[in-house]
Image (tube, rainbow, N blue to C red):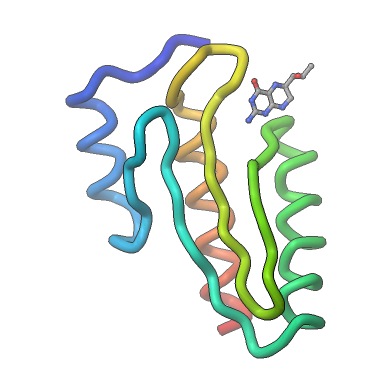
Length: 97
Ligand SMILES: C[C@H](O)[C@H](O)[C@H]1CNC2=NC(N)=NC(=O)C2=N1
């Protein structure tokens, strides 16, 4: 898969929730849930979304916080797949919020 140009990355970022931040080859967002159970449940749902998209997040969890970083490892940068998964994750998070 082809990596996006800086201009394409800017355009895609503008379509996303503003809390997604560009950091090098990654887009990152932090999600706060009610407690650990809610956070782990959210991760389970995101894991299923990731499997469906065949695109997997780098992430960390601390209690009720889930930090997600997306990049396309095989392409060595950001691709449409990252923005597709980010949109799916945001939609799910909105649904449960
Ligand atoms: C074989 C399989 O399609 C690849 O390994 C996929 C799986 N998930 C992936 N996820 C991410 N984030 N980057 C990849 O390059 C990637 N590659």
